[in-house]
Length: 480
Image (cartoon, rainbow, N blue to C red):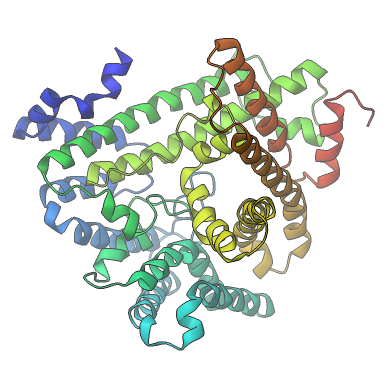
């Protein structure tokens, strides 16, 4: 039954019925209903309706909605929401319209307009800029960041830093498209992913126009199939949200000491609490906390990604999921690609392939350098930009506290992916053992690696490298 529900977009009879007026009404009604409480943006639901009714103006509708979402965020004074990854972009503090917040809107639009002008005129720019627009763009970002560090109290510079760090990777896709040629496209064709109406994290879900255009519905049948696939993802998001809620209600101890706890809660300590030593736990409980943390964070990411991709699919862009069954992956490289697909694609396109194509060394060393460029250097740089708040305020101790454990995380992630790729290459052509217990062992190995790796990445206000190292060695019975 579940398999049939998952393949509704492939069922020809359902697709035909969904193209009828009553079918469209049901699809849009159910889509809006599913988005009432979980959408990152208040405009996502009406945008889906308009984009479905005027598919030939889809990009214009989404671009206008992006501007309206930006204005709405300024008007109500949205504060940062890092967990949801939605509009944490601008440092709006007080509710209500103000000169600062409306000025921030103008600044976002100005930055987008300037980057678009540069992209349009890229073929006429000096040779170095034409060949290396990404390096030039990141030099601009780091210059603004350095300027903000020198002038920590300047609100305009701070807002500029927050804006460009959100746009960093979205503009990167625009510049990649510009290198290939922007002929036949306008700003409105790019604005909707530069500032998405559905919210989104700094990772561009759906990537840039090149990828989105390939997956855009070109007729009514393709639109309906995309919408049915989107409904499936929104329903899955609800299902995983129930599982996450059940974990919090019945399994995990509350994240705050004064929170109410169900009588049926097992009280399993959070991984961050165990690392900081606020909970004494047996070895078995510690290992269970490591594995449950991996499941918890994976499901939370899946919920958010399914909502964003579900919105895109309902609008007519039948793009890939961000998270696709990573807990069933049988190799480390497979897990990395399934856990956060668009982050992996970003690292591949901007770090892995440029390194791999430019290096003229042996194949193994070439692969090693390319993997470390993506999973270590690119990953670390991406998360360095996430600490722009601490940097502009001059809190370098906090920046280093976060990044020192991230260094360990990125190093072992890159090493594990490289070894996994070597193993796959050495076994190329050999049949994979299909027996269930062998498959279970491979999955368990992946869980073990990424569960232990999570120790170096789990968030906590007071966690430092020493705390993480002590907890890590304690899992193997070594004295701390």
